[in-house]
Picture (cartoon, helix red, strand yellow):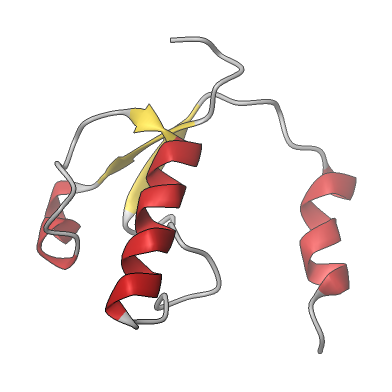
Length: 80
């Protein structure tokens, strides 16, 4: 695994919510995000939470280390 590539895998207990995804398999998070976004758009179903890939439903590894300033940018742009 390239540590700069963010990866995600579906947790097995949530497999029923994502029938097109194989649980427990690491894939590039960007590819998985694109697949989920397309699924939501074509099915006309909004994501359940604020993000396409919930940390409850997916496990993540790799990618660049996040710092506090970068993490807070999303919240600063979100209307209160």
